[in-house]
Length: 92
Image 1 (cartoon, helix red, strand yellow):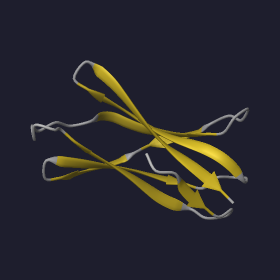
Image 2 (cartoon, one colour):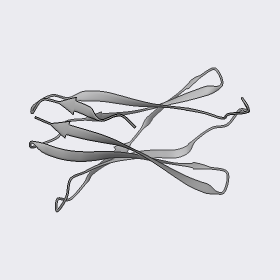
Image 3 (cartoon, one colour):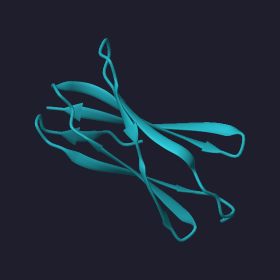
């Protein structure tokens, strides 16, 4: 996924859009997010999950505390599987 760049002090809503390739309906179960930086305790939260037709939008509101490289990871259940998707975040 494409890296997102933020300035220190910004608070942003970052949205991950999900869909099934065959267009089947689904619902992500217990969607959460985690914002992590090397050697620091990650921030975590529950995603806002909004259906959009055959797609779902998972949104996390983040505000990194310092400059550097972070990883925003979304996690959700789908059937018996646990799916994780990550977005690199750079704070300047």
